[in-house]
Image: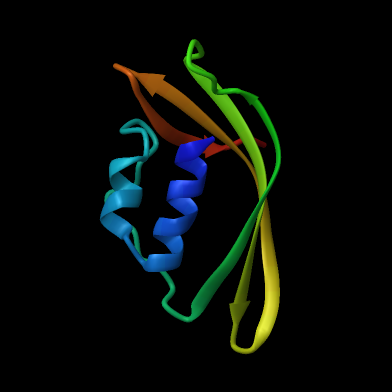
Amino acid sequence: MALMRSRFSAFALGLDEFLLATWHPETRPDELELDEAIVWGALDIIRTEAGGPFDTRGVVEFEAHYRLLNQSGSQREVSQFVREAGRWYYVDAAE
């Protein structure tokens, strides 16, 4: 899903305003404080469900790789997305 890749790039570049703008209003925090010490390096899309041109919902499971204080790490998440008025939004991480 294109929005997932865009959001990963925004995390890597520290673009908090873009992240907030692509977050669904019902779940979006008032502000976002990104950790500048984290260097995001790669994104692996593990699986997707729906999220196509005729869908209103989508799911992306991913693993994002980073470096923090000279140590490697990763974050794995199943993210939920919704399309409203033709625009995709990140909703939250599925449990």
